[in-house]
Image (cartoon, rainbow, N blue to C red; front, side, top):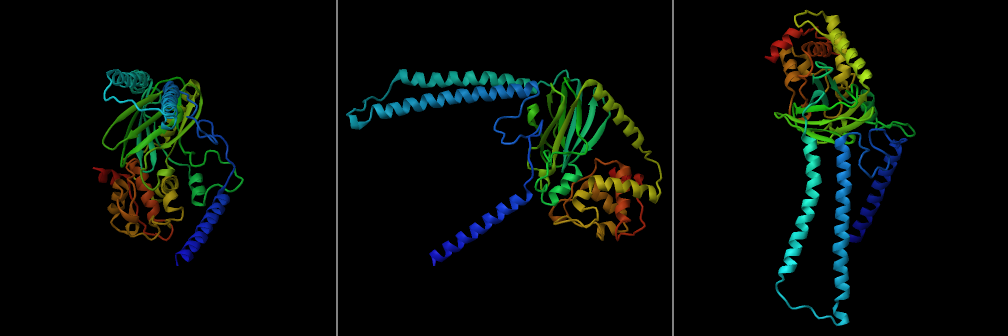
Length: 397
């Protein structure tokens, strides 16, 4: 009986392995090094582009060399002693209980080694924590599952935006990944709005989170800082080279954790100034009068854009949802005549089960009003209901 079971298990394992290999082959695509991001067959740390990352890399190699020397020395002495003093050549074991000299040596030598390793490590750690005299201060807020950037001090003060996975890459992921032969080096690392900073300037980062613990990590900068709800942490970097640098949320923050990339674009001083001017013009154009009364056509058009940028990745463009994500087309909350229920869901989110959804408080009152109006009057939802920004503002209080 056991023999029959064993053969059946072997056949099943072989079938599963073949299925897995065929699945891998179906999604295989051309892979190339991504400058500022992961490289093919990468074994070492990312090439450093900041003082901190350079210090970490040098410390890494120093510790590796010290540990390798200790390993070779200890095992060489051990194997030599075992071979030279083996019983088969007639060696007699020494008969003693204590040796002050040996105890002093095996206490003092490791102590000196630890001190020798701690000094350079402490120097790097202290440098990592020195956020003084920053040229630019940016607040980073982790949220399920995107990053919010607010420029608090320095050139660009007042700029704020949300950065999320580019929709085209989410569609690729939902379809099983890039097609065979395609060249998508930045797969699942492309965002719709990258963080932009000037080269050669000290950037202080203030991090927090709206919901769960996230972690902002960009290996080329040597930055890996947790963003914790209710706490403010800070770190810094100064990029020495213009370019694009990538990272990801380094904490498992929920089911969309894999779709929370980081893209930092480092520009020359002149290009950064032009970017700041362009962003300020965009913000001025999008600034909404909180007391403005919108009509249905205006809100629906605005809501369609907000939905495409923030909601369609999960609920799909047709509002049908997917997997455990609830559909908005025909949803009881959307069709409810009491508009406050849907406003509360967007402001506070939902927890637990298939209906779980993150809070969208980071959207403006007008954006929330627009997207609710859009969902209430799209697909088969023809409620004729309209939500004004003032209603959302009132619900925030």
